[in-house]
Length: 304
Length: 245
Image (cartoon, rainbow over all chains, first blue to last red; front, top):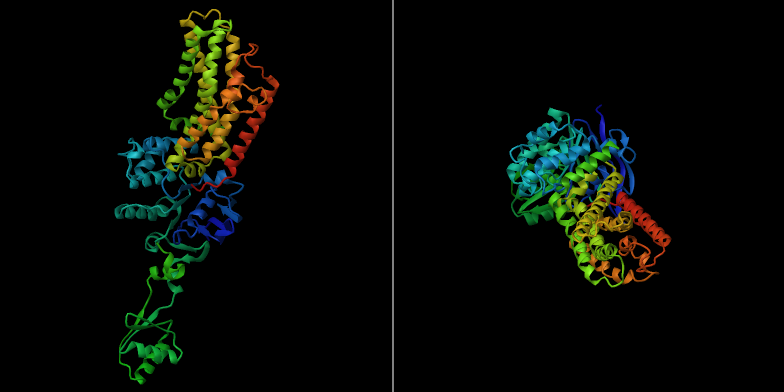
């Protein structure tokens, strides 16, 4: 049983009467890349800000490294590196100077600056002013800042936002390596399942402030039932006939779909179609992609 | 304590030093220049050095000094406002109280630096006008320190506003607009001491010259109360507020 790094109990944050984060029970363990997933506006950033002590919870508890955040904020944050939403930087300073400002707060040795610059490949640009950096470079500087204090836990809020595909790929590979190479656990938020899928071992899915799924990605796959597609002649009539027999049939693009059929039920549907003299030319089981599962969980209209 | 010292040096690193000079030098210079020009119109048979100082303080305390602290307050918060720095800074292992104090400490330091620069310019002007032997330095130092203390409530208020307000220009404009009535407020014995923008000038005016007759006790108690209200208010608000920008 590995150590729990982050645990929230009924974490709630209200703005007025609206609960932006509603009774969240997150659990992040050591050695994990935890993907915190949800459509924009679902409460991810608010949650992350609460984990960093930037926003106060309305109610609920946050424990990190087994200690209450409220009481031991400084000791806890010393072990956490964070990148919240857009990167924070002082544009009139160089990359190296930016790191130096934070280094002084953390009290780590000076050589650490070169190490993190190397890690995010910013050494060439270290002495350029940050306002001349591209967005990708600023994002990398943000990660360097987060790594500066040799954290045990890295909290990254939408770290690939606004990056080009190459930059996204780079950040992704970087995150995946962290637990293995440096024993850094990661909590990374995103609104894209495809992205989290490639990085995370565990996911938490949040929708309208509520955690609707938490567990391994493999578990998420099992959550949803396959659908069976029937290619039939005269689908309108066939749908009517099946409905009369009590099947939940939907019709999409001229095919009939029924959810959650096992083998026996499938054969019964085929049988009844054939008996009614509909021509059946295709029967196919369709497993939803993770993206479809995600969209199903979070509600289609809200994604992206 | 070590953490606080490191925080201060970090804050110092962020500052653009050339900008400090640009901000610190013109106000005292112009005030002393006006003061020395006023020597020609010394109609009250006041001693020349004192007259020159009073005319200097009138310009400086009325407008330059209160506006300058406002600009500095905005400046030391601007670096965080512009680059999204608050969420980074406050997610570091430092307490918000320390961050507040570090900013306040720098602001008080700039105000003190401005006083020192004023005195230096004044000394140069006194020397150029061959008044250096008549100057009573004790009065000047007392005045400079009193002015520094008197600007602290205003500075605390300006710092509070600067934490809240991202914009640079609007608070500056408001600050200038509010500084202007000082010239009227300072005439009033009843109202003057209660107007934060008038306090530095009232505190800096050498006493006993018949120009103003504000009771020192009134001024001191108003300044102290103002400082506590603005300082503690700003501090608590800064510690408690959501950092969601």
